[in-house]
Length: 118
Image (tube, rainbow, N blue to C red):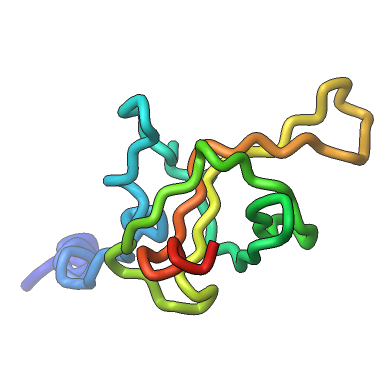
């Protein structure tokens, strides 16, 4: 007869492992070959083209995205929820007290077909 601990181990081993949300970003690299994502800084992001470039919706606000950070590639596993927009970066608060964070974009991922919309 198996002990309770042995049964627990067998059951745990037979359960499927959760899929890591950032697995879809692990292959993305910037133009210098550096990873766009360090397993915490990529997210789905709606996007729009405006007169002076690209904006992405991050942390409930539209932020400007530098044109040299934009990549037009398909992301395998993308749900299409944001039309293919993904933002990788972080918010930097220079003095730690400033409510207006400066957003640093590592990579902005847009679907290939959006290149013609710009």
